[in-house]
Image 1 (cartoon, helix red, strand yellow):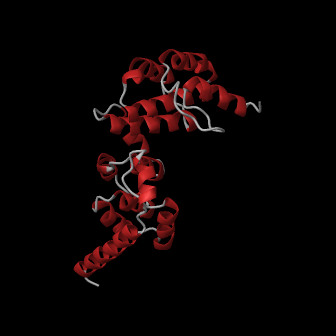
Image 2: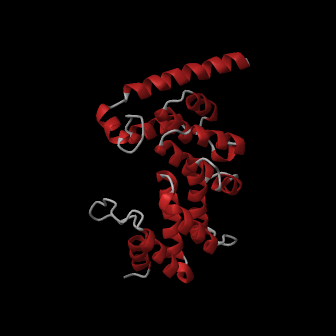
Image 3: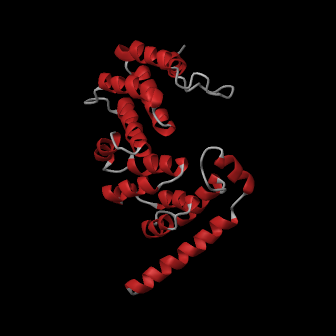
Length: 231
């Protein structure tokens, strides 16, 4: 098969998959997703079923991502091979992600599982775009939990104390997660992390369903420390 024929074949397959996703569009699912800032109405279990059927398809993934459709972007992430996506491509994808779900899947399923996570963490952390910076903070939270060596957690708390209260929503959420993870995993800084949360009151009144842990950092820290200690 010639290169042109392969290209045409993938484009045809892309169109077929896009039609399949369009057929799965559910207005009720879309209404729920839109409350969280996501602009698609495809049930994620069904979307994962398509990914399971197609398996890893980096060529098709790039075509689906290029469509600009959020459900297609989610499927593209599932069809990609994390180790084969280049740093510059991941950076461009993050800036094109659009919806929170696409952003989160990109960070968790591709960046964290690929070889460029630390380089991108450093590049994104202080990016002028708060949504991009939130990805840098999310990757930093992962380092705090899994590989804290070399991470200046006191300096992170300085930034959180100075900036979190007035940060845009996505960045604020990511900074708050980092605050909580420092408090949960670092006994030496636990009191300071908790006190910052008490003072700033970020997410203090966040509506939390029964049997779920509040994102208010002091409550989150206390609950996870209790669980980890077997209390």
